[in-house]
Amino acid sequence: MKLHIQNETSRLRAVILGTAESNGPTPTIEEAYDPKSVQHIKAGTYPKEADMIKEMEAVADVLKKYDVEVYRPEIIKDYNQIFARDIAFVIDDKIVKANVLPDRDREIDAIEHVWSKIPKENRLRLPEECHIEGGDVMPWNDYIFIGTYSGEDYADYITARTNMDAVIAIQELFPHKTVKSFELRKSNTDPKENALHLDCCFQPIGKDKAILHKNGFLVESEYNWLLDFFGKENVFEITKDEMYSMYSNIFSISEDVIISERNFTRLNTWLRENGFTVEEVPYAEIAKQEGLLRCSTMPLIRD
Image 1 (cartoon, rainbow, N blue to C red):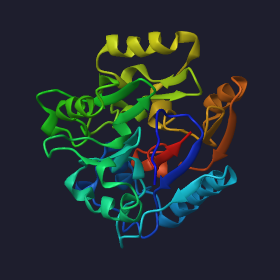
Image 2 (image 1 turned 180 degrees about the horizontal axis):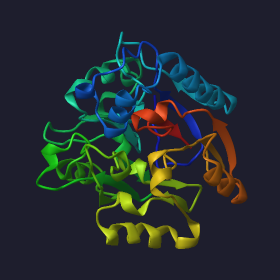
Image 3 (image 1 turned 120 degrees about the vertical axis):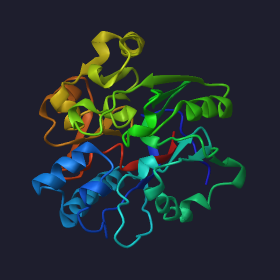
């Protein structure tokens, strides 16, 4: 398989879509990885497997409608495999295995049937001290945008997933690209104050537009850099509640076609007004785990 990913929006040809099958019982509060899941576990509203399977199949149907080759992970019994984005990511023709939370290590084994199709020299693993998840990594042509957290209290945050060691390693692996890192706001307890990954508060769309949430960024000048880079007139700014609902975590099939959650009325209206075709799907149950459409897809080949 010849991988090819330069950015977030070129025409998609092949993708790994996670699976909600055999997702296991509702986790305990201690087992949850993020504050939004904890909120729903406490409230008794944690998503049911059957509902999540339905939501993911709706996405699979849209991808097939656009002739995208869709790979799925092998099913591991009673194991959460929804968020395929976190476990690996593709830049250029290389796939990088992410160093995820230890509890999630088995997820990479479930995509061995894809991993093994890629030439060995294009399969990369970072050193152990590099923590990184695909939700924090965004190739954007000559740039690689990476969400990180470099506070001394990094180890105290289960929500801090990508460290500066990884940012440096990615720059060394892709010296021809400009790696730009962004400090993200982290909270173990309040999902409205927590940008779990960069794609929870930012995503480029089309050729020159972006969705942004200011409070997700710890350093205002880094947020302003993105605002200037895309141009204020090209940015859809989302509120704290919209960030919580995962408005920035939609998924581009091409520069013109976007898969979005059907309840994102304000965003979907804006997208259509700006010339995008919006494929609406139900994804509100999966959103309860602090992840959405970008989180559950891992692109392999774009034009």
